[in-house]
Length: 137
Image 1 (tube, rainbow, N blue to C red):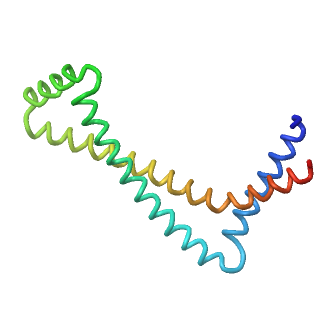
Image 2 (image 1 turned 90 degrees about the horizontal axis):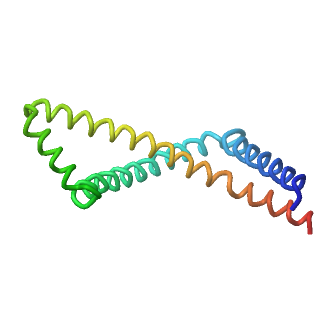
Image 3 (image 1 turned 90 degrees about the vertical axis):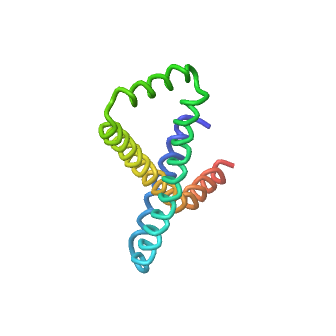
C-alpha cells in the first residue's frame, strides 16, 4: 500500500468513526442509546476498577513478599511502623490507600469508556476498511 493509499484509508476510517459516534449519540432514539451507553460504561468501569484493585494489591503484596530485594523492603516497612506512632501509621496508610483507589477509579473509568466507545466505532471502521480494500482490488 502506498503512502497516499494509507492516507486515504486513514481519512476514510476517521470519517467513519466520527459518523458512527454522531449517529449513535444524535438523532432519533439517541436518548435511550446514551443512557444505555452510560450504563454500560459504568458497569465496565466498575469491572476494570475491581480488576485494577485486585491486581494492584496483589502486586504490592507480591513485591513485598517475593520481589527483588524483598527483605530490604520488609525491613524498611517494619522499621517505619515501629518508629512511627500508631495514629500516624494509620493516617499515612489510609492516605496511601485512598490515593491508590482514586487512581484505580480514574483508570477504570477511562478503560470502561474506551472499551464501550470502541464497541460503538468498530463496526463502522471495519466497514470503511472493507470498502476501501474492495476498491483497491
